[in-house]
Length: 311
Image 1 (cartoon, rainbow, N blue to C red):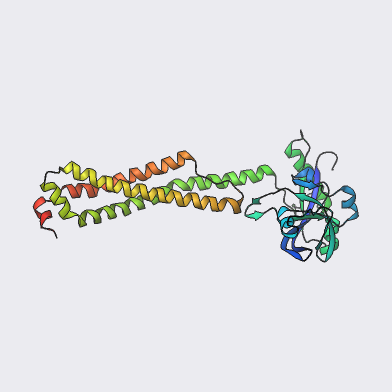
Image 2 (cartoon, rainbow, N blue to C red; image 1 turned 90 degrees about the vertical axis):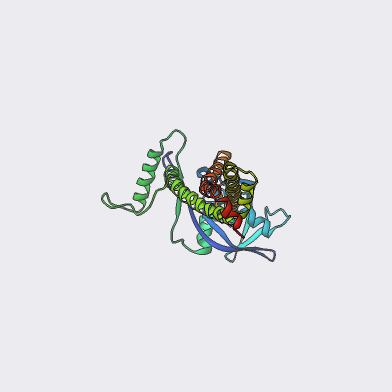
């Protein structure tokens, strides 16, 4: 704690295998950290506890395991108090995390947490550290950020004119970055959708024209027995509408499957809302009507005698 303004927790990370009882969990995300980390971010302890202050200071060989590591090494057993080997050293399990899911395509259930001093003793001094920080309630984020910057500059002995040799990323900055990306993607969406819609209209128009050409004699027979031009137009437009709606429904189904498949790795709830679905089907239907209008007019204007001569 820095003068009651900011709570710090350093984290070093590297991949390593974790083994116990003849089982091995490969390439777990091993994190060396400090006892203050739960005050900065939600660790989510399901059973047991997190690292204590005494264990942090003394570098005790204790670990908190993610759910995937527990399920792999201790299927159906209680791991609290048992030992695992990380980096050739034995560590006692003191806590288990709840299921964390994924974030940015990375599983958060592969984590192993240990005291930073124990991490350094096992793997050596880390080349870089992430320092998580949080200010107490009621303190403006800008004040906590300024205090963190001052502390980091003093720690690195940077002069008044020297630039920062570190980065400070706030939750607001991360959200702003995501919002900016979302806006850019949203701005690119309508032009791309319009181009795709025009391309689909060309495809439906060509498909309907081919259908009209193949059914020239049939259309001539219908006209000869009393069908009106309007009946031919209506039938042709209806055919084009059905083709467009089937294609739109197939596209929506593929979109739903793709979003469902991407939700897990990205850790984001991706789904189609009903207004988007209905709007997409409506746009597909309208494009089908427009695409079928020219083939329908062409079919209705066929000369009956010439159409009957077609084989």
